[in-house]
Image (cartoon, rainbow, N blue to C red):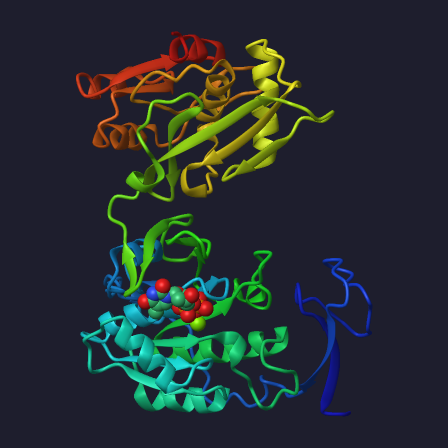
Length: 450
Ligand code: TYD
Ligand code: MG
């Protein structure tokens, strides 16, 4: 039998087939299939030193001691720091600041731990220039510029660091495979080799992966199940804010976020993020809601602009919330507040374009729409929390207590919420004026009366 095996791999989703197709049968993308030749070798025949299973009670349950990444925000997203022997995938668009955050972090970690930074994209001099710009003061960071996987593995074994960084997975290659660097099979093969190395030697590994413009982790998408933690670095190149968001985490909660600002001298963490997404102005069309991102409550402004339409189909656009959510909220307002919105365009934007996934922002969206439509500012110094049910009721929101606490911390005076347990309301007496409502109509009557 031939030792070379040819397969056709979709570069978009990673599905394999034995023949070429113009369109991937799995993800339907066009011209994404590439022939890849793998050398066929069995990995199972030459196992010499068999490992043995052990009874559960022989495992000591001593706490894993994580080490800090040097950034509190980064640690939070990781679930409280870096777990020894874990593999983290950091994804993000090119130019968003992945190399920057990782180099800053590496500098800080290397004050206490042995760190090896492997750069496959930039030369040593280029990294040095960035290093100087970032004002780092560690002298012990080891750096290695290489793209060949076996060289990289050799060097990791030699240095035996506590923390190693691969920048980036798309730039390295295993020379035993013929496909080019960045192809799905290269990315997959290189990561699994690196992951085995990390697990065997208890090295924490951070792998950087580029994400394509449309948001899919091309190549790295196929790695998500391999690694312990997947983190996305988001933001746009225009505003200076950057968000770390955990998508998967074996050692912490998901959807945790960390917020940074990109400055001339690198990234700085933002300690009070609610302040950057809110303005505290009392003008028509703007409300504040408190959403939950991971374990953290966050105040975000919602702005609406409602105008008489000149189109046969009114325009509906959103930034930061999903368009389907807006359609649903508009339908609930039409039906249960009795306002005909089909003659109006409706634009919604969250403060700073922050992406809100928490459904309890519905009430804030609805009130901002009606406030803009009626041209009446909402109740001053207030915040709105509640998910809108299809029959107009305001449904319970999760983590309501932490949300109210955040409102108190921010000095918000009024908060409109779904019906609470009595005990919760008593907790906040004298701190904030809590208005409990059960449906959208009540909320509108309370918040938008002149
Ligand atoms: P980089 O970390 O190279 O991005 P990635 O590794 O994700 O591709 O960041 C590049 C951008 O960051 C670049 O446009 C310049 C900007 N930047 C700063 O604004 N300040 C800095 O101190 C550094 C190092 C970069
Ligand atoms: Mg980079």
